Length: 398
Image (cartoon, rainbow, N blue to C red; front, side):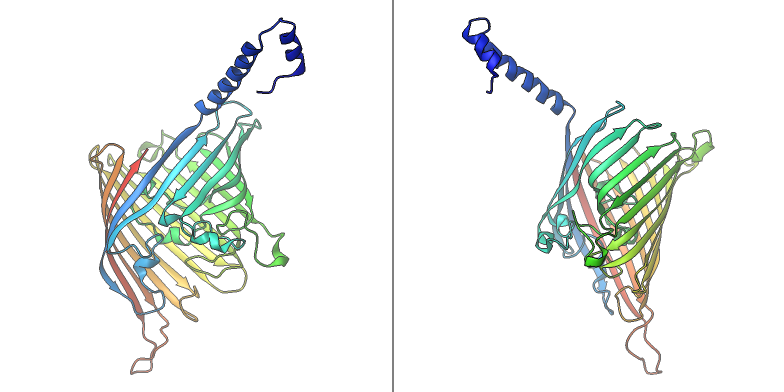
């Protein structure tokens, strides 16, 4: 324990007790540590599944369509640990100059490639990932601007990485063409209970902590993010509380994604709505994702998704999702044009405390309109990929 010279002098003269001084100093530091830790929370979950392929037909280069679904590659026909997530957080309090932090740690197969990086490609193969790690700050301007500085989730999308926070277990095709995380700075501001906005600047559109654009001549180039959320007033009848959300992310995609090619300027555009209905327990949703190459590689993709959720009882809920989309020049084949269709149904029954348990069936089909082979009449054939899968998902949240 370090003690200053003045305290040592007083102790030598018998004015103070050195032992009591040291103990008092330890008590002060311990109290400071306890105060800091008292506002820190630890939470997370363990995500597991059983997945079985009921049908799998492959006829063109999209490949196994079930393996193309986000986080499903290599998991069919067996038991799986998907991911373990641990969150350590000190959220912002109500003070004007509030400060805090958040760290999301991922362990397991779903962490592999989550932090794709051009600086350290070997790290992509690790089954450990950092989903978020940022310093949270508030500045007392207007109603207060909340800042995130570090690595944070993207600002667009109907669904999230956390399967337990989505209406269905498997992710949508819309999720597949969206960015996931960024390293930079993000500001959020709430004008009132009905209107909030966010805007930020990041290194790249693609994931990769501390990543930079691959081309040296584009090091200056940054990614720009913006979003707005509108909430219907409660006095608007049954649609009160419904939300409309829109956002965009424009920047360099280093790694590529389900569609597109890496090292290009890319624009992602999103609009979604969650709608209350006159039927008690029934909610609907719509999501539209569009991604466009801005660097000359000539690819486009759009996905439209529709959602229905019904809370039948306190423990039983039913969820349905339908999607349709088009991919053009998306790395499937030269001058390819493919259509995607997907239907998902989920039954969730929370039998155990803190456990989310659900059974899901999903059907997907993709048509390639520009096959490379000619049929007997000299017309290009249309190839189709079809997948039908059955999933059981169990998530313990703590």
